[in-house]
Length: 325
Ligand code: CUA
Image (cartoon, rainbow, N blue to C red):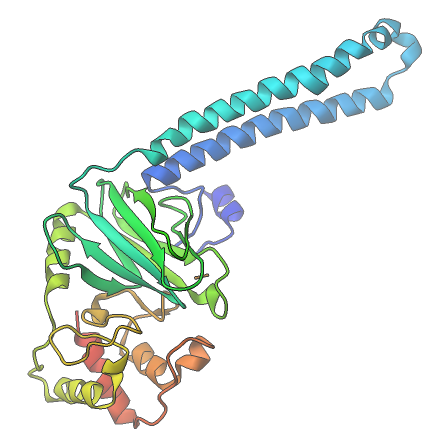
């Protein structure tokens, strides 16, 4: 584990290491990596060994060896590379065949759209016409193969959850498909893996794998609107502020007049792990901080800092958003 952590270089509560796979595709890729590393190590050691031998050898003492040099060059320079590279090629074909299997017709499909610099996530369970829209978090049922439909509304991004599957680019004008199957419940950090301008390095997200029944219950809740006025007057004041301050120009809270689609859908924002696309834990304090000074927390993101709210107003707004579970 120390080795994989060191090589992955991203320890912490949510390591982003391809060598600690927890998804079917990531396991396949990790196996391919170990095969290639093993092959490369054997050849490296053989070449270094031969180099030492060649430096130390006295040609007069090995006249027969000198005569066989053509054979040696042919064997080591042509035959060996052809055999080794062919073997690795076949292995990589066989191992990666799994990654491109067709997904069942009735599988859950999740559309992820790369935005600058966040992720729109739309769940399309079979038999439902309208997608369930969320952002910056992809929830998955453990053990089920889910098809991701990856698109972008602007520049190229790359969707990558190292512990679950390989990278897939999101390319303008295209929908790229990838399948993902989480093997264990857990939270896995993902990251945009293609430079997309500005705060690209702060374009992260979490994939949360849940047992299938928990996932189904969560998705049912996620499909609900959140229009009701909260009983708590403080939260109701926050809702009022949200609607009166123009937040709905960019954000949607289903069930309220707020129906903007420029920024992330906030219908169940309080239930997500993070805010700002994976950069901060989600709580009243960070939400208030984000509203007041998002340009400091994530420079050049498309939401202006709203530093006109009083402390009390910020707290009410943040508490209301946090209550949207
Ligand atoms: Cu999106 Cu880099």
